[in-house]
Length: 130
Image (cartoon, rainbow, N blue to C red; front, side):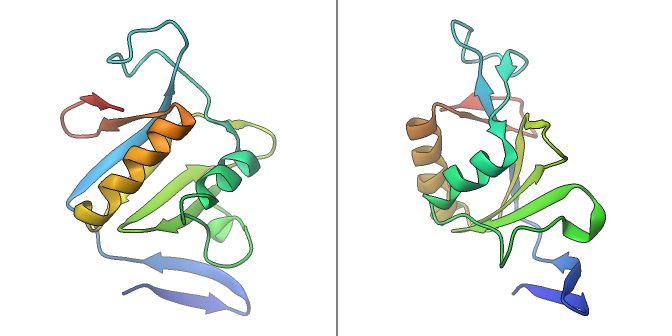
């Protein structure tokens, strides 16, 4: 269950169950070996990334705001929590995905990768999917 402490209307902390598996969403460079996690290009500007993920029922809880001044944005989706670094006009290079329910999250992540041309990298093994 998600819980959030508040100071006024500004969220100051998120607590959620840590998933069994973590993935990183990346955008493979054109004409690169799609199995090489180091050959990537940015996912895009953070507002565009948030808009793209919203099409897959993955979005921030409430208005898009900096999570407690960290420069991170937290998005919640089916069976997963996605964190992106969003500072100024810098593009998002990758997104960290914490899978809380792999059976629910995996089909959504597969659709994200297929439709957006992104790929998933398993944090533990380094294997690239998608």
